[in-house]
Length: 253
Image 1: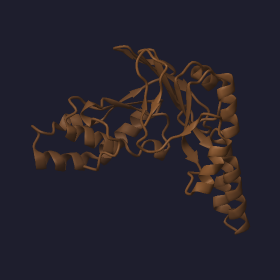
Image 2: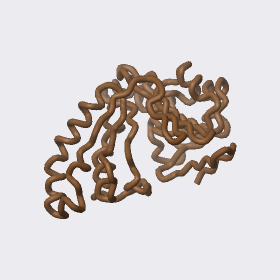
Image 3: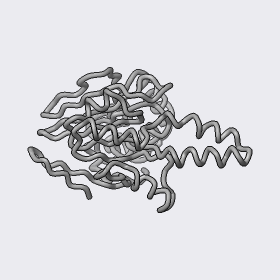
Image 4: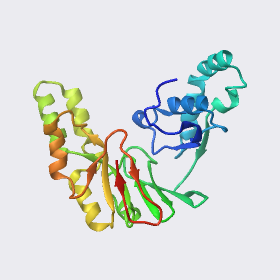
């Protein structure tokens, strides 16, 4: 199987929350399913998401059908129960979608047109809370659901970089790419809008992820660092946020 770059105990993975069905938000499902199956996950993995998740899961199961068969033939059904390699889906709407063992997960609709529905999620456990925006503009609903959260993870766009790239590509005659760069400018939260979020909601820690464009050098990174809300952090692969129960402490490693 592919390497477990997440560092997670994959045998404990029970499900994945999907915000929407853009390719960059679903492409790792197959690897997570395979790695957790090989690691000894004791039940089928559930993919939870908005309307349409059943079609996505059906597609993954079809695409990986031959792969599952090869691995069972190679290692034996006693080690790799073939039933546990088949994904299951659960379609959810807005509201509380999980409430068990002190964990509450609430889904809420976000603004990422033309994708409808697109969701974000709030997770509450032992007095601590995390909000994940998915891909969204800053909306009244996100401000409301982020109020009181310890960590809000939000996508962010540096409009000046995108507009600069649009102008450059248009000037070189690449109108196709320029059109794409123009179209995405109302697709993600701008850094200015994220300042509005922290001004109107009581947020312990704002963490920016899914940066558009992804900064490839220190100069581009500096655009985010110099204009993002005070105290915000830019996430990196492998970064861990620890929230000790019944505490206000936020540990970032």
